[in-house]
Length: 123
Image (tube, rainbow, N blue to C red; front, top):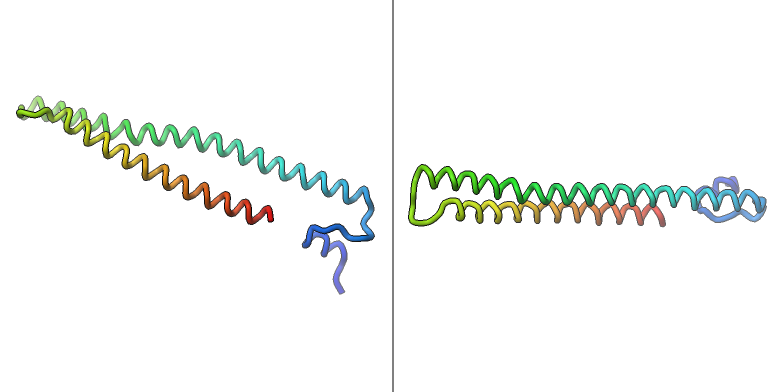
């Protein structure tokens, strides 16, 4: 024989003999918990977005500057008809953009995975 309170907890449906006040309090608590979860999710999303901007920025800037610095050093040591600085600056920029693209795709996958898990929990 099953307990009606256990059925209520599992199914989320009100039991016929449940007092009105109890249902109202339960519904209000459920809404409040959902709002707190969503608000926490928004805060995490904002901070993760800001950290992603920083990560993308640094992942482009660092290889670009390293390429430029190596190019300047090579231009001073081994003079050529073409500029090592411009060549390696462009190569560093290309590597940095590919690196940033990698991080954005990775974060996008994780975000979609977390959203799917959150939707599964809400159902």
